Amino acid sequence: MKISPIWIGSIILLTGLGGCASLPAAQTGSSTDELVQRDPLERINRPLYFVGSGVDRHAIRPITQTYVAIAPKPVRRGFQNFALNLSQPGVFLNDVFQGRLNAAGETLGRFAINSTVGLAGLFDIAKSNGLPAHDNDFGLTLGRAGVPAGAYLYIPVVGPSNVRDLAGELTDFFIDPLGWLTAPGVGAVLLTGDTVSLAEKRIDADAALQDAYTSAVDPYAAIKSYFVQDRQAELAGRNLENSTDLPVFPEMPGDIEAGLVPIQ
Image 1 (cartoon, rainbow, N blue to C red):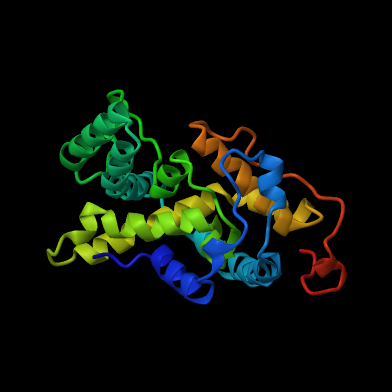
Image 2 (cartoon, rainbow, N blue to C red):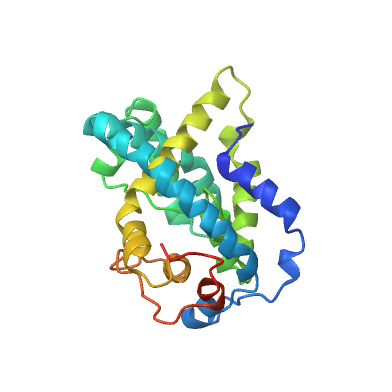
C-alpha cells in the first residue's frame, strides 16, 4: 500500500487531536460566513499556521519554483497527467458512492484510455476525446451525504483542512485500489504521483498564497476563508471564481496583537 505524505500528516494530527470530532461541528447547511467564523481550535491552528507558513515560504515554495524553472513544460505536463491518472480509481469509487454513475463511467473511461493509449497516463488522450477530468474524494462524499465539516484544522505542509476532510483523506488512502497492488516498484510510483500532485497544487495556489502573505491583514484568516469558500463550492459541484481574490480582514485577532503570531 502506498505511503502518502497526507496520510502521514493525518495520522500525526489524529493522534494529537483525537477528540476533535466531538467539538462543535460546522453543518453542511450553514452559511459560508458561519463556517468561516467557526474555528474552535484557533489557539492550536494559529501556531501551526505560523510554523507551516514558514516552511512553505522558505522551503516548499523555492523547491516548486526551481521545479518550474528547470522542467520543460511538456515534461511537467506529462508528470501532471501521470499523477492525475493515478488518482482516477479513487475518483471513480467516490463517483459511485455518490450515485453519480455518468461521472463514474467517464472516470473509468478516462483511466482505461489514458492508461493504455496515453502511455500510463503521460498523455491525456481522454480529454482530447471529450472526457475531461473532474475531482472527487471521500471528504466530498461525506459532505454530500450530510456529514458536518467539523472543526477547521491547519496542518503544516499539508495546509488547511477540517475533521471531515481529514477523515476523507484517510479513507481515500485505504480504499484506493492501486494502493493494494503488490508488484515491485508500485509503492515508489504511487509516492511519486502523490509528490507531483502536491507540488502542482502548490504551484497552482502560489498567486493566492502570495497575495495572502503580503496583502492580507490576517493571512491565517484569509487562507481559512478561501479554503471554506472553495470547499463549499466543490460540494455544490462548481469551481470557486476569482480564486486569487482572497479577503482581507481589517481587525486583528488578539493573538496577533499580543505578538504570538507576527503579521507576514
